[in-house]
Image (cartoon, rainbow, N blue to C red; front, side):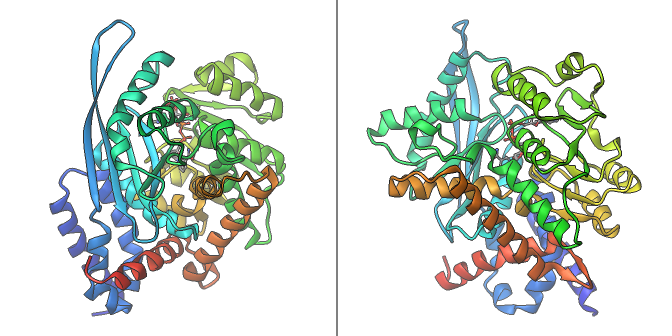
Length: 452
Ligand code: NDP
């Protein structure tokens, strides 16, 4: 059998087993298929991974903790939510990965995120295993006190499962500085000790400079690295960004600083198109809207009359050179990818996790678009979380310049690894490069440990 057909047959067989073992978990199936498609030929060429069943073991989390979080709302009503921590793989370091609070959170979503995190953390070169957690709690519309009571209650259970050498959670969708502070304060009270058991902390109690900006900045640095392979750069490029949360806002900030013109932003209500570009003053207004007032993106178009709000839509129909999906999973479907390509898209860097579905990824690759997959392009956030852990452990604080310089170095290192394993006839398949480079380090550690 020719090698391509053999690899395809092996992928199909492997996926049938995975789907049987994990019924109904469609996001998890999607994430595993994306990795397996590109990894299988490599594994078939390296029989030791096959004999040790490394792929089977890497797709089975080490453990999953599921628990109830009971709390009282402002009206005195009792509420109950479900929370999870998926500790996926700690072969190369303590578990590390964010907590997501969103009504759409399911075990499938957290397993896809935890699985991706294993590869991403490996790519950073730092000693971090992969995990993810969260709850179906919806912070939107809740008062600060309600969010506090929920976070405190969640930590009463979570504290048993985390620790600076065990598992170090961080933020993600719906979990920002406010939620991290409430969780950290409760842990400290329960354990009667100060330890860096969460990252994304406030600057006056152990947080790192540049952590807030790191995912967005890192995504733009990765884009810079990709464009440089074609002798190109960011200055003068027209860009679309989706989302208006942590990742999106700081991707926009860095793009403006590097001379690009960002023409879109979004939230779950729709997107705004500002043909004049979001400049530094407009971004300051947008940050205040989103980070302080917790407002909605349609207010941007009411405040800046040249902008238009498109309710219920995503920004991919707007003609741009570069795209930065920074909201959520599966926000770019194949039709969106085709529209972007027809409109002359040069490159895309994923700030969000798995924002492009598999058919969209195939479309970008087939058309030679530079495609920076999430596990490489958005690894800057967890990388600076790793640097926060180092600073906490050493009881020191690095300057903004020092952290930013380390972030840049880590992103270009990740880029180099992707090129090493993904370059093919003058085109870099970053999906393959990231999957293989991320896999090798974890797989080799697992081989070394024997049958565990
Ligand atoms: P935030 O909660 O700060 O922002 C999320 C943004 O995405 C908001 O604008 C939100 O709009 C929008 N959004 C969320 N869900 C949907 C949806 N179903 N449809 C449309 N828009 C949606 O989260 P982050 O910025 O931290 O995270 C964004 C993405 O980046 C996620 O995929 C996350 O996993 C990934 N990521 C984050 C990292 C970090 O350091 N924070 C690190 C690496 C990856 P609305 O307010 O209306 O819900």
